[in-house]
Length: 29
Image (cartoon, rainbow, N blue to C red):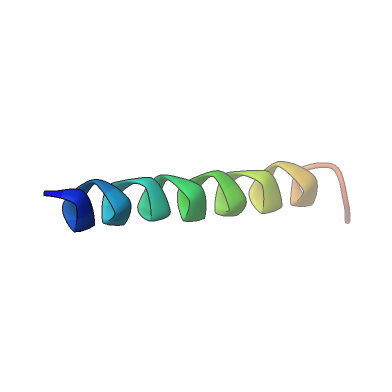
């Protein structure tokens, strides 16, 4: 159960990073 929750948190972390990169690219050429 702990590993499952950890995997979820890591997945959310990657989603946040990818979202941030996409957000920056929306302003950069």
